[in-house]
Amino acid sequence: MEITLLISLTAVIVSVAAYLRWSRTNKENRRLRNIKLKDETLTLTTELLMLQHELQNKLGVDFLEELKANMDEETFASVIEEVQWLTMQEQIISTGREILFALESDFDPVNVEIIYKHNQMILTQTRELANGLELLMS
Image (tube, rainbow, N blue to C red; front, side, top):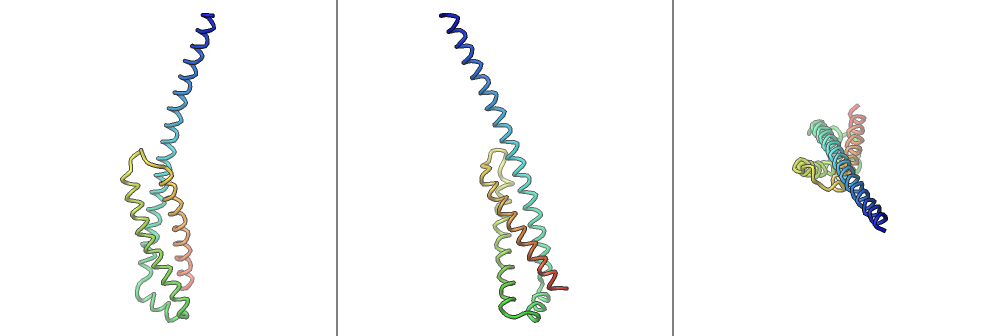
């Protein structure tokens, strides 16, 4: 009876120790994954802001006047609306970037993932607009 109790107690102690070790390792892995996601998000955000800045530089008054002269009112209004939307997104992205820089290793990975996916979508749309404007310019 005492041996069975001793074996059971030992098994419980070993199980608890294994769980604690697994829990620590899992927490560390999650922390490292979150840091990697945060770094990727910051890189993507920086790339996006640079691309949007470059796009805004191309969208000078002369270029917009040339565009307006070469397309119908509806298409031109659509281009202007897209540019305005991207400018608004740039403000959102800048705010998200500031939040990411303010966060240390203890942050909610769900929020970072939302920011990352939003930035990916905006980057794709910004590239499409930039490519479309390049085609219009040529």
